[in-house]
Image 1 (spheres, rainbow, N blue to C red):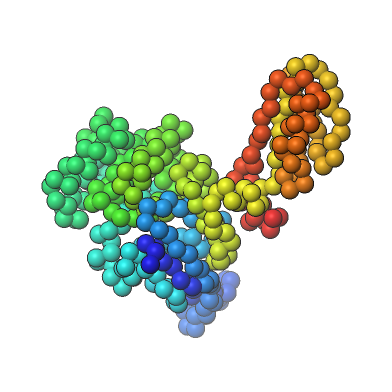
Image 2 (tube, rainbow, N blue to C red; image 1 turned 60 degrees about the vertical axis):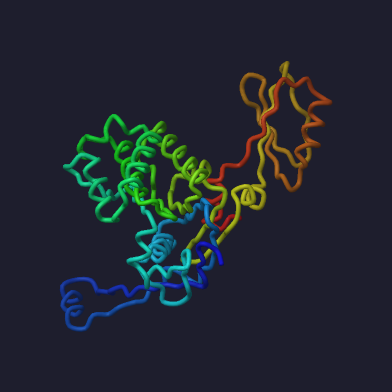
Length: 326
């Protein structure tokens, strides 16, 4: 059995449907009407221990509902969920002691207390043994360079510092799986890279299973090897980032820098645009034009200083998938 096993899971909600105006409000009090909205439709996937998986979709796609079912907050209407042998919504007390959750927009730290005091409180809540607590605390504070602010009140921290502290708070009890919800939202470039590097190291050293929901595709590209995409409650894609590029991102761009100013002859299936400084942009469909043949042709016919292949950005591919363009 996989570490995380989701089998044909569905979840719907009853939403109050109220008519407009005062009359509608009064009618709703007497005889409320509801409509059913299906948030998740027969989703199935498996995740092995130690995997780092991006779980993404547009707003309203059902990803938050799925994460809440995986974390035991919600129960499914149908289907089965198992995480390391636990059924999250049935064995919640035992299960939550083995998971960590990081919400980019919600903090579990005490606003007016020093960061270390919040850590001590979490130590008591999770009944963390003293040696485990000290080992994890010292290690994470060092890895995230938190020594300069761990004794400061949370309200005095920058957003990047608070996010680092929140990540440590979610990991002090040595969880087997961590759910990251927008872990770098609002954090500056340097802070984002510090967090991503920490996540990569933790996964490599401790084999912690990680599931990310984020709108920042750099978080996914720099941490995950696998991507699950959902839209309108259904799974659209489940596979590697490389595979999604090969399957859906067929458009390629080759930047050619010439040693001297000259025009390139037309090449079938290739769109050529002039750039500055003797550079040319060649755009083509990878399924129709072989990139190695194209480069050999150019090298044999022209005096070339440099060639650069531009891979399609994963974000643009996913946007096209949302829009039904691929």
